[in-house]
Image (tube, rainbow over all chains, first blue to last red; front, side, top):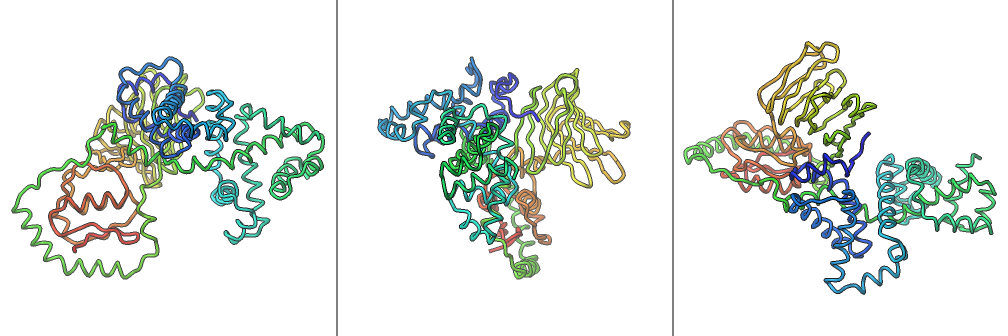
Length: 200
Length: 330
């Protein structure tokens, strides 16, 4: 199956022509990941949504001057990044960013490319979780998103703890398989930490 | 115990006891196991930090962005045709009122267990794809497509189950072919939708030219132009066409309802079909009432009903009750 190719010259031509379907398609593919990316800078989800929505409206309004030198994907991430930084400067809330950046070492230390890769990887993982079988997905999300223990999930869903553990194992197995093509993007630091633990 | 089972056990155990000894005991010194553990742990760690994605709804936010792009006109009103028609509608309304109230009360008394909010949402979203040849496809919920090998080089063939909207990039050397269970749709470059059900395949052409034919006998064929609809009946493999296109059949794609010249019961049927509800028949009342909207953007059911009801001149209103849409009077 051919997924959205954001760098397709056909797609870019359709964007230049102002075709609604092309904008909708691009928006549906990138809005979620760009918003999460922007949130990392702004530390505010609603502000992040606004930045990305403004970006797409601007893309449409300036479609005739659309000049993509590298790739459309890079353009979208770069523009989102720039808009976030501009907003932080304009609103004189840079201290908020610095505060967040101090907390979030990845934002502080990583390059823009690293940050894009990281957000994209997480987006792939999120989509893979969304495609898990319903029961398996619910249990996995309760554990990972809501921080519930297996015992608490078992109680909430009226299941045995063993069933919950089996479902989480199943989820992990499926997710690991689906994430295999992206394993080259694993953070080196994590690997080093594991080696350190195992070696001691 | 298999190595991968050990790794899963370890991750689960880590929730309770994160000790170096445990890691070493379970994994040992095997390099492969270490690498596997690393990939499991990566998934495990990252998945705890994905809640932000959960809170971003591209479908509903697209409607906001779309309205700012001013791509489509919405809520265009057309004038009511005549005062005489209005009077006639009121007379018929009065005559049908007694019968209709009985119907409404009967349905209402059946009781509905579904919470109202559960039915007020826009049906789930589509998946969008751009193929290598520039063709854009929107797949409706629950539908699937598969692309043949060498797509775009030796062929432009795909296989569809369900419902999809196609905007096919023009290429006269390689016709675009869509195979359903029994039929084939062949095009050069155009926009159209296909809906496959157990009974039939329905093809609605928005622009360009499309051929619909039997997989086993290509002489059983109809050529469809813009604003035509083709039908392939699976039971007897009959192919037919009509010179009309129901734009509401692609509302799931265009996110727009087209109510021009539709009577209230037809509008009710369109809304009921879209939101997967059942419209309760209402006798003759519908024949004389008009909806003063030609186009309306797809929004939540409550918003759509509110807009439609505000446009009505007579006393009849469309209301939701559980799984039903009712045509009723105050």
